[in-house]
Image 1 (spheres, rainbow, N blue to C red):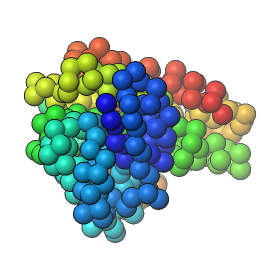
Image 2 (tube, one colour; image 1 turned 180 degrees about the vertical axis):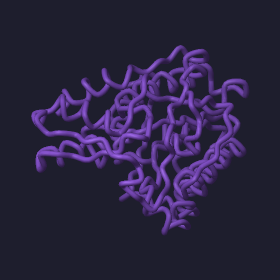
Image 3 (cartoon, one colour; image 1 turned 90 degrees about the vertical axis):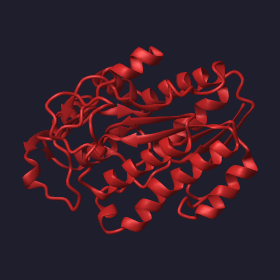
Image 4 (spheres, rainbow, N blue to C red; image 1 turned 45 degrees about the horizontal axis):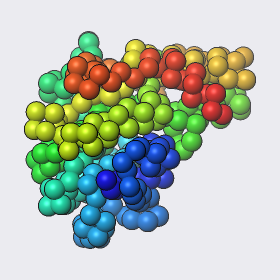
Length: 291
């Protein structure tokens, strides 16, 4: 089987690129990063897919600058919505499948219990809106596909909350972090391990059937606030004397509105595939040992 990976150089794509080739039966893995292909160049994207002729497309690429997206609407839409649409159409033309990652920011955060895949999305940012448009495009144009919604993704590589907190803790005695936004931090390692199982399912079953295709939530277990996450990071680091102060969202205004609560229920993922990611605290501990 041949896999075509987009977003090879991103924090998730890096782990995927290292791991996918080790799956028995994967004969070829072609990865494209931001320096190889600008996903806003849609005609070029179509050509690459048709030249590669994959059996499975994995799209780990996205425009993820949540605040900047508010002023770069067209670019965010091209990368997050139009490019996945092209991928989905090309996949169908080649009789291939597709795995596409999405985000908890498709929800408005007004829930009081974990969101299921049946809950109605209502994004309140350009980033969330364009990611939802991308989901809908993939579901419309490729019936052999999985949409994997995840949240608060991080690793020891790339630009993310974990690395920012470690850098700031090394520089300051006190950190002020928002404490009234609740979610589930998810490591790229946990995401990659789960994705490998989904790829193996795809291979064993010659694709994702119509009853299997669709949206799945895929996050680490449990929940915390950004402040709680920061405290756990600092406590596990060599900067454990740094004090982490809880502040409200109102004290940290940003161009894009953040949802207050975006914990996602992973029940459908477990019921369908038997896959369960580790709790976020255990995943964080494992991640920090990679340092």
